Amino acid sequence: MAIEHPPVVHNPLFFLDYDGTLAPITDHPMTAYPYPGVRDLLTGLHERYPLWIVTGRHLRDLAVLLGLPLPAIGLHGVQEARIGGEIVSRMPGEARAAVEVLKQTVPEIEGTWVEDKEHTFTVHYRDAVEKAKVRELLGAWLSELPETLHAIWGKDIVEPRPRGIDKGIAVRRIVLKYGRHTPIYIGDDTTDEDAFRELDGDAVTIKVGAGETAARYRLPGPEAVIAYLQEYITLS
Image (cartoon, rainbow, N blue to C red):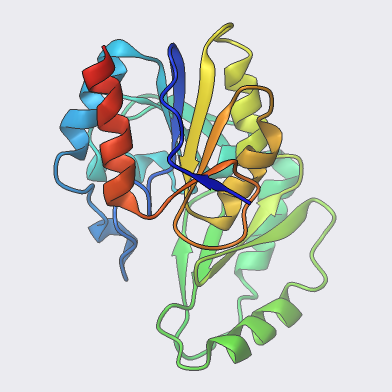
């Protein structure tokens, strides 16, 4: 069971999810600008500590929405870059081809729409009236994915993703570069659970909001996240 009130640690290494953590979840992804004060807060943290944004978005979205040249992981681990800079893709060619084929077969279901992320895509069903029925139909469509892909389900979304790539694997790769820093991972969605499970030892893993989680700690919402991060500015 996750504990409320996560500790403030010295020498942190921040990994921060974007949507639902630093910005609201909106009906259209490109209207999800960060909460007031978040840009200044991230700038202040980055001046003091290593900090990475970890998102399911294509990193070009964050160049528009966040507009800060922070190190980032995009598409759940497929991309790595400084926001606004050249993007390195870890998408295997076979998986990319499988995604392109699958994209042509998305069923037309009322209340759903497809967000094209170049290397991957997401089916949104937040506007569907009968979400349980939509999940059933989408589950049937995804029941025979090629071996190179598997489906990840988030908050009213589903996305095919290459096997062997996730937020946890990406974060572990970054942690190894930073030596004695204590990882702090904060996120709200299903895909963040991969990182919660991957990080161990003294890592501070924080689930935002309600729901079952592998995280050690919990914060009730984005306002609490901002207040927690602000403590690190005061600490320094």
